Amino acid sequence: MSGPSEPSPSPSTSGAPTAQPSPGDELTIRYDNGNGTVSTWTLTCAPAGGNHPDPKAACAALQSHEEALQPVPPDRACTEQYGGPDTATITGTWRGQPVNSILSRTNGCEIGRWDALAGLLPRAGT
Image (cartoon, rainbow, N blue to C red):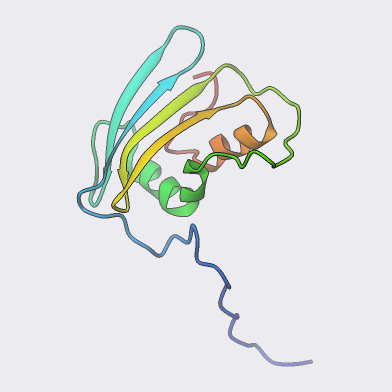
């Protein structure tokens, strides 16, 4: 048996939580539960603030899963399942880059994006 060793570095740091948000970053999140309730929040992460219900959890979700802000590639196969009528639009600036992201729960890939951003986005149907 060999002794403990250092973990090898990951070949890609995309989406890694080590990079920090920029002080000028601000996002607007518009959440529609699909049943007549629409909420709009602002969020900053350096420091965590805005009128989002839980800015610390929202910033942690973004730092851990920022790749979920990107659309699903058109050639990706997604399961045919429906997760509900919820939609969210996220606009603004993240890490100095413009963001214009639309999320839904219309198939397995979209549900995965939504769930990855738990904390930024509410549980479906709330």
